[in-house]
Image (cartoon, rainbow, N blue to C red; front, side, top):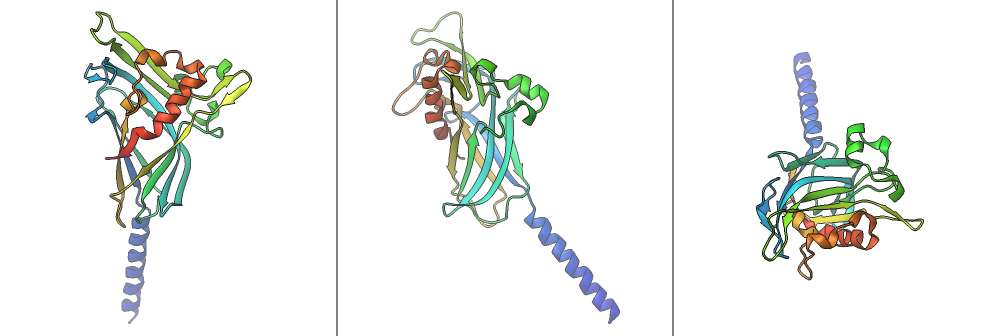
Length: 245
């Protein structure tokens, strides 16, 4: 009888541990970077925007923060942190793990693109990251939210030498007022089930310049760091760049 009781205790402990382990499995957010329907490949002239400009992407660095899961329009999980993506070489995908996310169905992922005030500071990131993403002090300081850079040939005939573009976002101090340029991204998730532990997201960088109602040649966004109006274009377009794959 003692052996039987001991066996039951051990079995109960094992089952409890196994259930706890299942409940603590990470939810993985897999982010695939694309240009339209094509995978993003750095340093290759593979893409043409709606303005007819052939272009390559040489840099994509950005922050997201404050990831939430929603079910029936209610927040069921919040991870108040920041995540930094810096693409290089052939690796243009990103994976974010959320170990504390609850097991179960949800119908949307929501997050902040950029950094709200509590994360937008030098002491929140490693020094090398700060040096790569520092926002000029005379423009408000803190960090860039995104650096999207590359080269392009002007439409319609093209040129022998490429032109560079640098689409940078961040909060902007202008005439004594700080203009916030972080924004909320809401991605409906149709594939979620009670067992979902992995979600595939697409970040389509072409949406910064190409929208159904309007297309922006790269030159129109030059000088964007110092322009409240041009930064507002990114805030408007940014949420449309994300979707479930």
